Length: 321
Image (tube, rainbow, N blue to C red; front, side, top):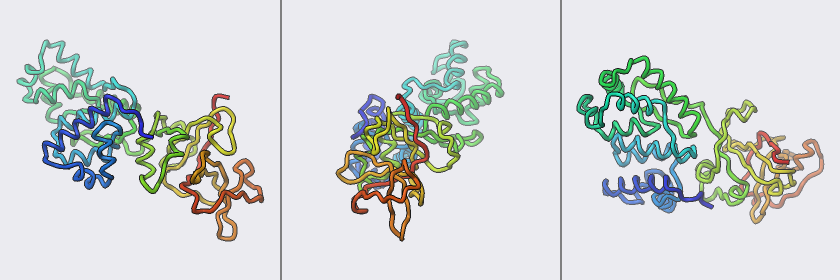
């Protein structure tokens, strides 16, 4: 089931749609460029889903977007993914306060710096917008801001991005470091959503980022595992065996489980997520109760072809007892 349509998603979809029209391209052209279905593109343009960061970067290249368009759309995606609709960076506030302290309009500052007013607005309102090195020097001189202060705000800006958005922020201009690629956040999806996931129609990573309901820090996962992870959160009765209270499962996105791993299994035509232990016996995958990892009792879960998907569980947290 798609995530709810929101004004931010609708706005982002409209911007992409207008870019397609301006470039004389069709939805089919975008679908081929992103290697997704036309149905997925339609949902994106109508605000029912939002693209992931990698797809948005490909949109920019296809539509030959201006820097200002890139700033605005990156900012919208950051707000959508973080759930913070008034997301601002320290750099936004620094520039706005410095401009107002000197009683400058955007037009006035533009005449002093030769920076377009649209970009100046973006630097003050888009949390992911960064001036180029040359623009920083011009703004520093016009607004009488020391270069060291700018660099400090850039560092604080990076911290805000890391805390508020799971999207990898690409390096925007030479001379400024991008957010480290090892900074990750974990999307949380409901067990109900995962029961509806079908790997025959969509990659699990795309599905998870489309369906997520909240974001948690990777610091919440103390497994030391470097794999990409998402979390499944739902009432205990969504699982088999039933868990007390509600449960949060930390699950690997891609890696297939190995012998002895605790796994979550989805069977066709089953309204539960099965929690089992995978055991290799006589070249056959056997699933036993995850509560009895060393049990010799074989658990039958049906024909292996009935398994829709299976993922390794890194950790199970029991909550709200």
